[in-house]
Figure 1 (tube, helix red, strand yellow):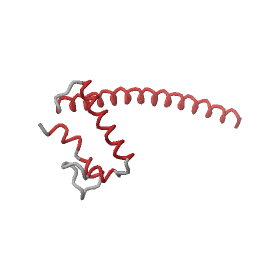
Figure 2 (tube, rainbow, N blue to C red):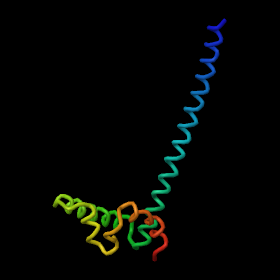
Figure 3 (cartoon, rainbow, N blue to C red):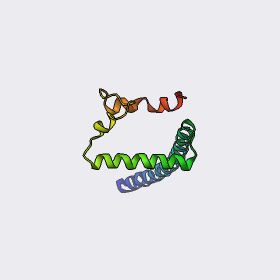
Figure 4 (tube, rainbow, N blue to C red):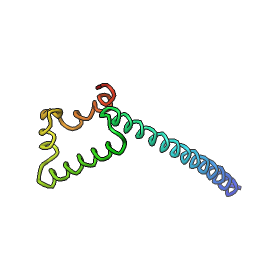
Length: 109
């Protein structure tokens, strides 16, 4: 009789696990969809802020990335690179610098 009870418990748990796995898969799909929309909105906001088309925005980001890679390959650290720009105070660390970036993306005109 104890064997039947364990088997029943296992069957119930298998059903619960299957149901939970299905719920997690559905939630992950919804999260992925929402993250995609979130990212598109940020790109749109960035394009609007700098008055660039999608293609021009992509080109600008690509050029910036290439320039950063060249500076890093030349031996510069990220803090050295940050100190080259007027908008990156040397006394702030990266966490502080980027902490406000989502707000400033939308607040500045």
